[in-house]
Image (cartoon, rainbow, N blue to C red; front, side, top):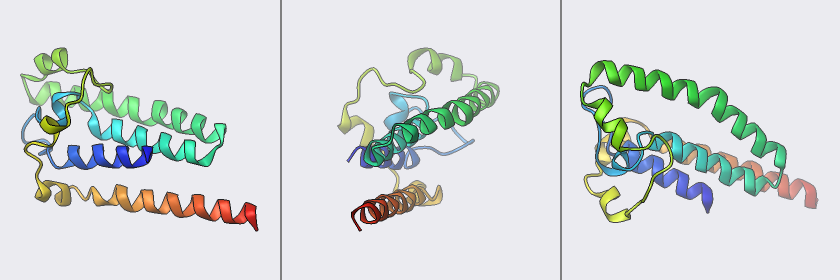
Length: 143
């Protein structure tokens, strides 16, 4: 269930962002500057909890710190250079953890076309693959 929340957040973010053309500040981007990464972290944590293995949890945290934090810094530098209004946006909106999250306002303006353009359905397919691995692990230990 936790992983589904991550998939939902990623799907919403993907359906709002028009990469490199406009600074997206609507939908989930009105509450966090990096909702795609937030969704990925929640997705990973959901699977770490389902795996019932503390090492999986630590690996996910390590991967986040090693991969996502440098990417976030790099993307923010790019956005600052491309969009003059980014600094003001960054002052108002936190990077990863929202202060509040009203669902109705987050979904307003969602574009199914952008969702498919960004191929965000791949996160759903990846989650299904992870679920299959977890089921296989359970069956392996039961058999």
